[in-house]
Amino acid sequence: MKFKPLSSRGLKTYSIKDRKSKVNVEDFAKVPLKGATVREFLDSLPGILAAGDLKSVAAAVIKANKEKRTVALGMGAHVIKVGLGPLIIDLMERGIINSVAMNGACVVHDFESAYAGCTSEDVDKELGAGAFGMAEETGKFLNQAIRKDKKKGLGRAVGEMIAKSRFPYKEKSILAAGARLDIPVTVHVALGTDILHIHPHMDGGATGAASIKDFQIFASVVASLEKGVYLNIGSAVILPEVFLKALTLARNLGHKVEGFTTVNMDFIQHYRPLTNVVRRPTMGGGAGYRLTGHHEIMVPLLYAAIIEGMD
Image 1 (cartoon, rainbow, N blue to C red):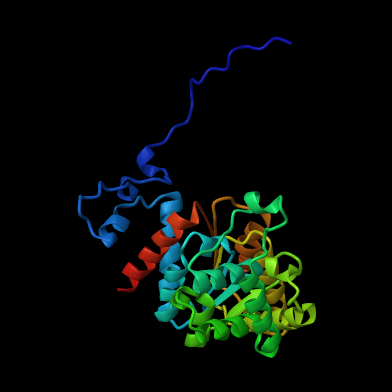
Image 2 (cartoon, rainbow, N blue to C red; image 1 turned 30 degrees about the vertical axis):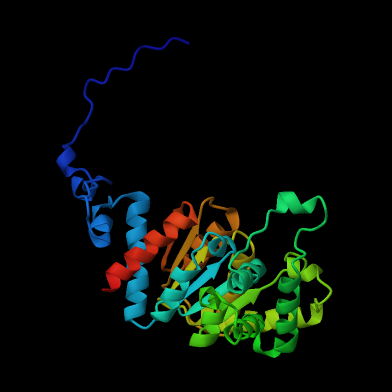
């Protein structure tokens, strides 16, 4: 086969001014001034890709709050381990976050922070000697609280225990804040995944009953998400799966849950949150966002954008 060079003579063109472009100079970053306010810094960010999405997510939260719609947070333990509890609590106190859903590990780090002012042991160091997860107070206090008040749900049982305690750092506890503010903080446990499950005080029946109570409460929260916002921060498996089941339950029972905004924030974008939080729930309407980056940077940025926008 023989081929002749293809000439571009006769090519049809158009003016760039008539073309739709994804990027415009109006969206470019502005050079922030030294000593600029937080709002001026946020305004200096480019309105492109993730920076634009960050602003859109903050705007969705602000809009939902002003319209008295539900803003719910689902989170993994890493959010607490990198010190972001005070920001979550402040958003709860301001009435911006109306519900918090946690995986089981969150309870461990929330309690330890409140009780001892420290958490996140060195697993590499302790595992070899079989000492990992063997903190006496963590297993004892948490399991006793769950067993005592399992009918209230796991989150409220532990939250009230911390709130009523004399723990020196209990103001850092998201669970205690939920009990104090009467905001649902639900805990969704996978048995065998958390260190308190290997302690002798562990009661599988009580833990299961308390966690299924929390699922029912969370399903009620999800049923109210019409035109609201659901943020999944740092949970790659448990919360995305729980959220999807709660959503289908709510819709099956006749609740209209459409037109809402979903967000997945993590430093790696995984299959389940992208599918079960960002894409599937919003297929019939709404918007799904993904924000990628370290929690200790991205969450404060989103927090600042929300607070500045609220003002």
